[in-house]
Image: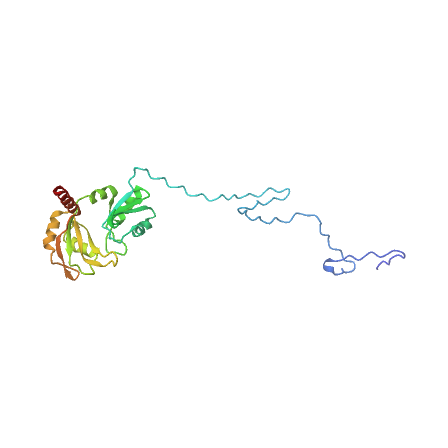
Length: 275
């Protein structure tokens, strides 16, 4: 039987069940949740980023390991080449339009080009058909010499003619034996004139078609340089009347500038003596 409350006493409040629902009469109340217990699990700390302070550890905990990020190291500069190291190549058989910009573009893909110097006539400023290419080291120059020499040059039917600078300078100092070539067709270029003779005479060193300075059109004649006087003499007779492009050539001796200068000075001397 249920006990009746005594008069003058307030009945005890009914216990509240979880979820806000009233418990059944006489039921056992649910256990109380403890207010103090184990701390919740720590969330993993993100890695420290460059320029941010490291994460702070909570009181009573060991600090997390810190990651340090160093600035990237700059590559060490290449050792400068010694002053007596030969790292320059001689380049020859160049056409009149092959300037420093063209030669530089030929060797820029190597990544080791230092400078380009082409030789010009001191009076006219025209290119003389050879020059010097300097690289960062002797090893680089040697690689270029072995790789490029004899290969085709870009945008032209010519091959690279390379040598070490000292050997090239000596070779260029050899005497030239030149012939005059006239009656040339308008489409004859330096290269065509050169190759017309080179296929027969290996000592041909170059050819030049004379052009008008204003119009840049051919004047119908030019010159071919030989390194062997015997081949020069043979070409004077063997190539006279032979076709170059569409017209037969007229060949004759080329006047030497030095000889002409000596003769002119001799004439002036004689005139002064007669006076």
